[in-house]
Image 1 (cartoon, rainbow, N blue to C red):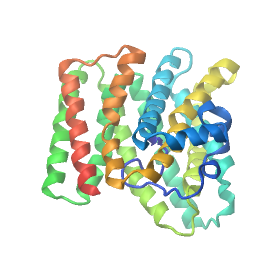
Image 2 (image 1 turned 30 degrees about the vertical axis):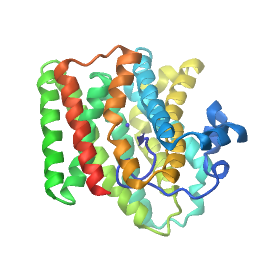
Image 3 (image 1 turned 90 degrees about the vertical axis):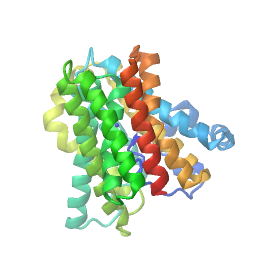
Length: 323
């Protein structure tokens, strides 16, 4: 679920961490070890030479290729188990990188970050359960309405109203296509959008606390989310836990869907104007639809394609106005 990366910051649209350190100091060690493109200094120099737009696209492709590979794993591992292992993998890399125990955690901060982590984990869970029932691009388009709604409520300008109206029309069109065939999938995608909205609101509060080191809140939230859902989801992950190849594949999904997009987006943000970066985020539903068509053969119909386009336009209006 841009981390989310869906985990690339406190939120994918309105709450991004800054990036000022040198590349080799900023990337998580797990990302360097697990992804060849991020492994050595020459590779880092190559990334620095790529246009930032290309880096963003590579991150988006990694994110949704990871999601598409997750769909392929659902035949062997339940979607809930894959979702949990994705959060576990991302938490392990982020905790090893950030060492969040170095931040001074008060009970109030732990409560806030705990809620943040639960929202993050439930967002990923709902999203994976949704893409087990709906095409990838459709699920992302429905989910995207959560942050659009939050952003629109925060401003209420004519552009915001137009963005919200376009998004609503797009989602209603998708509902007309999918409610009969998979009402559960539609509800789960909408639930992912609601948890994404909660993730944004809580992420703002985490980011506003200057006593929490950058990204420590995200790392601890990931760990709390993984631990919090473990009693309910670990049974679903057993087929992967007892099979090293399946376990490696599920953990790779977590790295591809969370860690790699996070690292690449950090580099892109350093070199892109904020408004341009936000505008690129609006392309995520279309990117998901293209990946779904190529990897999973999920070619959208005319109505679905038009509905996804409306959500993309709505996100473009909203992010451009916000920045």
